Image (tube, rainbow, N blue to C red):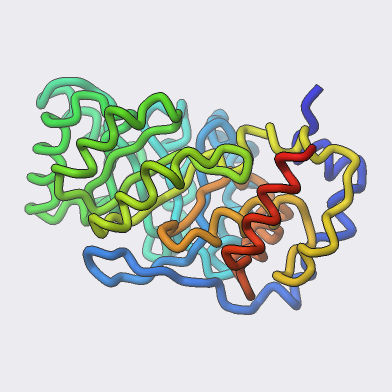
Length: 301
């Protein structure tokens, strides 16, 4: 049985270690988007599953609280998609209040086929989120890549979107991804990468760095796979050297320790998760030798 982060909190294994709010005000690490030099905080919110709730006030309120705390701590990147159920509608409800939209780097995706279908889907994203500009739109899972990239570049030229990218989430998609990275002028790529799933470091991350493409990392916890692996185990002592207080920080600092990574985008639907994850994007990151030590520790479990 997998041990989710929620279960860790319920068991009291994580709560005593969460960073105190007073200590959480230190600035987040920021990394540049290579094509523009724009700096982004090195941690983002992924909205898959956790933001797929009925967009009613009682369901939206705790998510809005999490987003507000995220922005308060210096975060800005929020990643969503039309295929994430009601997530875009939920974000629209959140952005309708106050000035949060102006403080967020908003990323979405297109997964429809055909020029007409792609444009219609993107237009619905604008409407669902109640925004005039989306910072990044990426071709989701390389669906009709050529057609959708042409649409996205047109929208970028018309200043409806600011950056263009592509996404994958499985190692099996790398064969199709690599030629796109080599030949298309992309701003971003989103890829799966974690301490126990390192194939992207061999194939995708070096190519992205070579081409000057920013990297968002999805499933940095392996969809709770890593929490199951460390169930009942204390953090290794060596993790203290680079400021890890919790397992989520350990997993995120590993990902951030790769110089090609711009930001991981774990799911964050609770203030406690926001504070814990944002702490991973502060202070020192593990160097190459420490990252190898982290790999060896996880591989031995």
